[in-house]
Length: 112
Length: 117
Image (tube, rainbow over all chains, first blue to last red; front, side, top):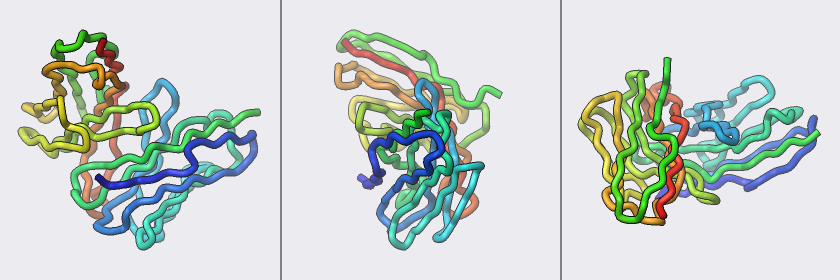
């Protein structure tokens, strides 16, 4: 079973703080890394799909980087807002090309 | 455009009963997946399919069967439900995985909350 690890498990920040999370994965036979945002009582929604070493992607205040050689990705949120409160999942497509293996997520809570 | 639709949204079963969860997508996606979500364990892959008529086992397939008779539908069956199968089940679909730009995001259904008593 592929081991995809996310840290921290949970995070509590104040509005305006910037924060980042880590996703670690085995670097062999890598195809892609996905980041998803999962709000309570909703379904996960994709933020980024990253395939190349050194990839950087940005959507508004959220950005992500990818290092396939050492097997990690960072997700950054600049100036956190209460609406950023959610669980952030990473998923890796590696080895067998037909499936996504998810980490357990980082739960972010942003308070005023 | 409905995306990915799961039926039912909630269900309570008695131990030993059977049921089928239906997942339907209208995006012409080749890949479809069934995950279960349990506290502290994230999303774990039960079974998946890379096209009509094909299925494969994921990480936790025991106690479940699947079928993909039509491209748009992926059915998850529980033949004899057990309390350990109490969970929230998510279906997802994607156009493609694999190398480079062919790797596309997955779209998720709203989930089915199943309780086995």
